[in-house]
Image (tube, rainbow, N blue to C red; front, top):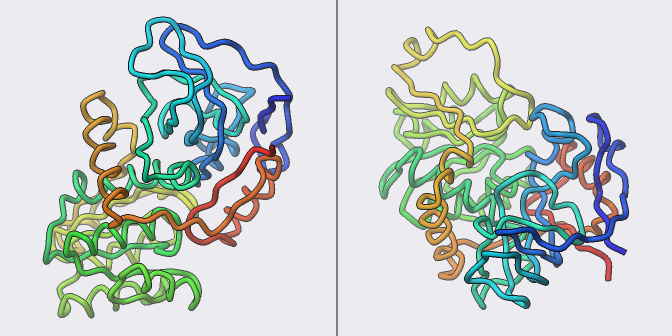
Length: 324
């Protein structure tokens, strides 16, 4: 029996429950997909909690890998049996089966396993746009990565080091800091020491860019870590959203730049989607970017997965697997 892990109302992890359903045939322009692995991202908790509104009822999840079972009218380039992945569109990936627009699907290269694809596509896309098109860093530049032992954090460290950027990283424990170092970080420390670490790797000047997926709790230290006219890319709200910003602090700290980017606005056109996807798939295929799957859970355990994610009991990437 096909099923999804969905919620009828927003709230805590307990609102996620199992719902059985009969898969529908794909509509025009759609692919019917049987999921083999489902990615877990912090944005899933925002949809479930109501921080990012969705139409109810809904299932979380915007990333998965699977096998095409049927092709809708007007779809070209895909056939039953193709291995595909996706990481954009409406939530609903927490399911054994799903119909998705063919325009959102990527054929997976032979060297990329389904579980690895589900674990990293959205995170790799986020990493690509943050480094290459948002901050536009290059060899010799410097950066601070917060939550560097998390799914996006580890990929950011890898990508930055691959292009020659010096990296300071923060994480919440000695074990997580060691994990960030193993990914290539030049310095790894706790959040309270982030500004000092940023000054240490830059001779006191401050880093060119800060990548901050934590949000409210790291806002001040992120600003303190930047050089004059440095960039803070605040791309997540793990500790809560940043609110009540006094723009005068940006002038006082050195004419700083701040952006709140999202993947939707960097992968918003077919051209951007294809170019960005080709870039991160190339990094994965070359081995310069690696999926670091630390947690494998059953799809039926989705509520507990959210509890662990919000309690920061996870490192690297988490995937969920539909039961056989």
